[in-house]
Length: 138
Image (cartoon, rainbow, N blue to C red; front, side, top):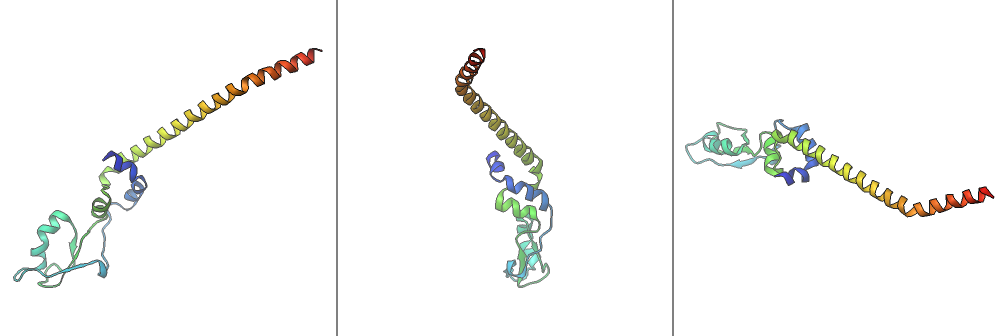
């Protein structure tokens, strides 16, 4: 679960921007079903909609049920990307912690490289300074 938050960090901002919005399916996205005889679309699909989500466009119809699998953006993001709107602040905190860690590691790396470069150049710098001071004394 923790790794998924790091892998999906670009989606964190999308979740915050589009979370908790209702979805209206286009006609090509609707699933057409035929309920058992004697039942309406609502009676037939109500248990499924309650557990899985989605909505019906023609709740009282007895044939040609038009079902959209997602009613909200939260249902879409949860089922396709395993991202929940409720976790947005946790995910943002992990993104901040990861960014801070990366900047700290990069700063430490640059400091080590700089110290290594200075220590390699130090004998040259000292000897050159000494040489210039010796020449100035003459």
